[in-house]
Image (tube, rainbow, N blue to C red; front, side, top):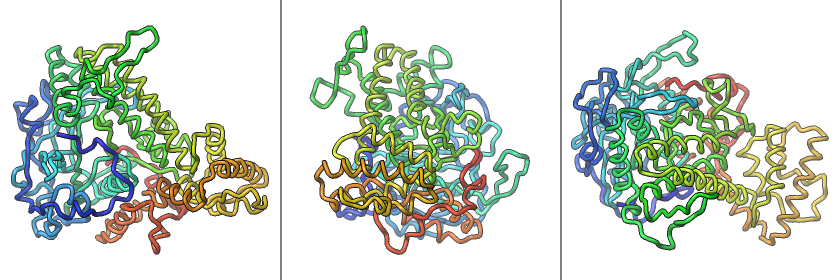
Length: 568
């Protein structure tokens, strides 16, 4: 079965004739499958008492979040279409009960996954789904496998000292950013719906002893799989017999999500041999696990290059937050670069060392890939030479993709390291809004005869409050840029259209999230729904929605808006 995550989604998705012609199902007609539970070892216990779960990939456990007259906050039409769900299902009186976990969905077999992870570079041991419970896998009319998971629906054995719940604030952020990233064309987990539980949850937002009650909520997340790097790591750190679980889990992943590697043969579609220094050549056709690890590394590199392209900072790149399918997963303290700062981190917990700041994401991705290959090596699925090759391919793929993205963002025919390097330096010096600058850049004309005093006019809205010296630096850069545009020979309008298709007008800025959160906490969900619609088409002009492209107001830079902790 082909993986539903094999290709990155196209920017600005819109309903197609094919999608409209699919069968429309009610919830009771969804085609459930239990491959994860059926094919992998499970916990013999099914209670939610916090404990170490040994020799198992999951624990069967049911949602248990307290609920009182739950309400549907928002839902994604495009995710409903993926699942072939009839849109009228979202009007059902019992829909909030079903997607808060208060009532079971017919055909579902709930479980929480067991995994470990490195957190901020240190091994944290068993982590697991502490507040997320997978309902099961739905097979849609195209034969795609989609896992449905409720986040914030109660305790599991992996909850440790936490309550297994989530608040409306963090749930709105996760719901909106899942769909916003898809709109940007970036591989991501999706979100079907968001439900407010009607019950309060106590949270200490800044870990400063000032806890308060907040509205509780639950997001239904959707992905082909929620397997993480830590899903393999945990078993390699335990008894020798658990190394066999690493093999079982790898076989399961390849069978269901990388099926094209099951019986690989030499073909033009794969690059098979590569010498690494004095090491022997690596032939990926002789080891499906090595071929799989390479593809995981390349998908991860592709993903992080795409993040860098739109100025997205994840904030918590622990190995338990790294998808084995190369998807953006677990939206906590994320942020887009309102003011270009390579050292920006949206995570207050990350402030001392800024391990997960914007500029570090590519290197952290490589470090995490090294942790991913470690259990595969320990289980003797891949050799050390193959593990080294996996990391080499990560680096190559990242640079290829990043250079391609930056070249397209500038509308150039080929990569110009010096020009792009100087631009990024200028952006950092003047703390320029990353999104708005690149969107405006498409208005620069390929014309040598533009008077010097008019060169910065197209960029005026992004280059605010710059002094004479910095103005000179920008004029010099624009002059060099125009030379490149003239030599390319691409007509201005053609280039503008191409640049606007990769440089979004709208991104999910943290202050926009906060505005929607403030209204929702007062019972008004309209802004959440408006934001969802805008972010579904971030590359379009959308007349009347220009306010969503504005620079953040002064209040947006206060803690709790521009920066958050890992707390939910």
